[in-house]
Amino acid sequence: MSHPREGTGAWLPVLTFVLVFAGAVVGSMLWGQGGEIVRDQVDLAPDDVLEVSGWAGPEDPFAAGLVLRLTPLHAEPERQAFDAGALAARLGLEAGQPWRLEVTWPLGAGVKPRFEKLFAALTEAPTSLTIVDDQGLCASTFARLVTEAHGRHLVQLFDPERTLEVSAERAEGQLHFWGRGPGEGARLAGPGFSLPMAPVEVLRGDLPTFVANLDEVDR
Image (cartoon, rainbow, N blue to C red; front, side, top):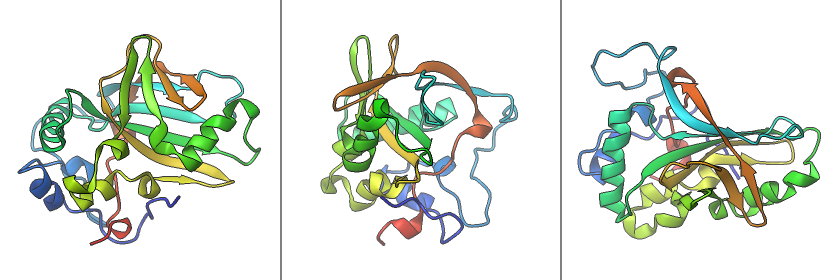
């Protein structure tokens, strides 16, 4: 899998989203090379003060550097709610929200046996991953929900081949989900495994603001 290249090209223009979502502005996801992140002109507390609720894991002493962090796609609640409505209408989805799963996993010491199924899923079938809790399914990957009928750029934007890199040395990047937020017993699940995740508070300034690089998207 290829990881979005940093420092080359320009980030996917906001105009793409304006056209796709019929006027939805999601500038916090995308920015121009050497430019500043687009923000609404409103008075907000600094990003090093405001927090976003999410989930992180696995809670395992043998995780060996593996970090999974699930947060809303947007740090700003108003933008998250707006895009949730726009995506649901555009894609014909049931009620839910967009979510971002960040994966950070240095593999210099190899893959521990208890995480081999996770590694296989990330390598061979990342779209098979789901977010579940004690009540059942919470969210599925966008890559399973978006088709060419919804637009080529949307397919490419959420394509794990473009957002997640997995090699013998590391797994790093993002996967994007649609659905409800998990409750008690939150877990990342895949074929033959599930990994517990615990509630966390994340500073807004620590959250990524991009999804895809224009160099990785066919024009």
